[in-house]
Picture 1 (tube, rainbow, N blue to C red):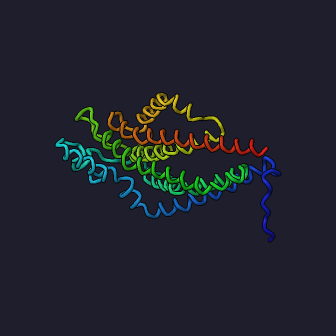
Picture 2 (picture 1 turned 45 degrees about the vertical axis):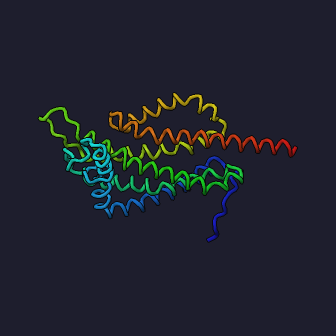
Picture 3 (picture 1 turned 30 degrees about the vertical axis):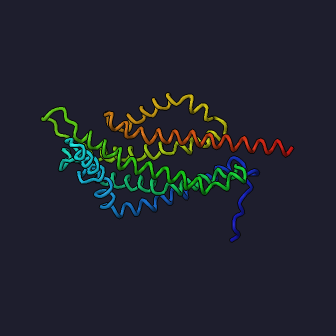
Length: 280
């Protein structure tokens, strides 16, 4: 059977582009399913070690804050033996459904670099040759920032949220017994939100490339950006000042890094424009 020739992007119709996108999506979905199957098999590790890790007081984050409190001679709630809540399931299909969806989300998170690569393969034909050369660096950087955000969400945001919300009490007559889906949702939203937020430098890079953002704009609206970051931090963290500050610090650092990246892009584009003018 003859091998299908790849069409020239300039000669492809709208339906051809849709067909191309379909194959990229299908390959990405296949990779997610394969990873999800492995996650489904190793359910004990995924649930007992990963998901329920922040529920145990021997979690590294709790130990770290406990040691910090002891160093300063302050009694810390992170030094307890266990969190005062139990996770329950009330639906007949709840456990199986949680198992399936947790496996799928594991596939999405771990398969992020490949999904990003397929997305890049789809949009790269519309870019210049010199821009396509940086694809590998883009994928590695974007994936690295995403996983850095995932780790930050898992080891900082998720345990702080679980510790605060799980320990919160309004009356001794009310027992805190959250649903399994609610607990998993808290961990998942913390991890994914931080993973997406850590992509800020990549977003600023492309917005600067297309001329929508400049270093001057980023500096001018820095105070507004700070307010937005505080709002986002309040959404993904429990309503206490300490947790919001802990989340704000790395995002503010990323914002400053984004300003530096924007400056570099603008200088590079100005240099290219100067070279083109000199060549005329």
